[in-house]
Length: 245
Image 1 (cartoon, rainbow, N blue to C red):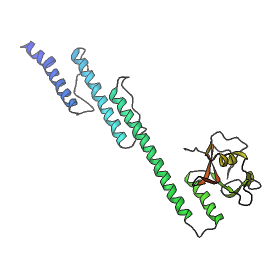
Image 2 (cartoon, one colour):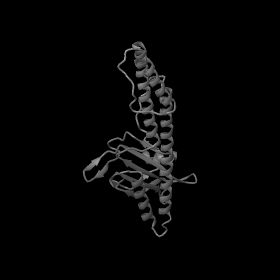
Image 3 (cartoon, one colour):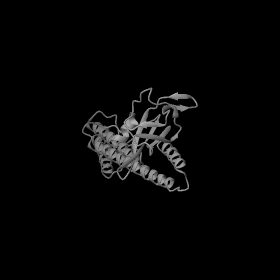
């Protein structure tokens, strides 16, 4: 009788409990706490500990998947081991969704920018000088640039680019408001018809002026102004942050 009772309480019932928990896990029922005796030092205790770890791991993966679904693409997750295939699959899914979201955000950002720029260009009542000034202001604000300048080919002397508009720009950099086509980065951008991104800005190249004084920008971006493959000028922007191109 004693042996039967001992066997039931210490072997049969615990095995039945383990079976019930395994069945629940196989159905996707994950609990933060499961009723297992983790203090046993025998095989049943080892199985109980393994099931407890499995349950917590499934719960962690479930929470990670939930974060991904909510758009938290920077959520952290630690793999159980190099062989954690499910964990690796979730991280791969997170990276793919993050990359797609970033591409979509860039597309939306570009589309909104094109739309707003089109609205500015349709303001036919503005004089050229005022229109270019408004464009310089919009470009600066939309790209989070501290300042910008627009250079167009000089109609009276096509060997030069003329400063036509600027936003929060230090005009002293261009005393004559003109640049030769083969001069400096602006001229290089014009000749090559390609963007130039400068991340290490020489201290003597450009200063951003504010109420606190002057400081070198973190990055300078020059973009050619082109219509149907024909280049008309260059826009130069500077920021204390960074540019993604």
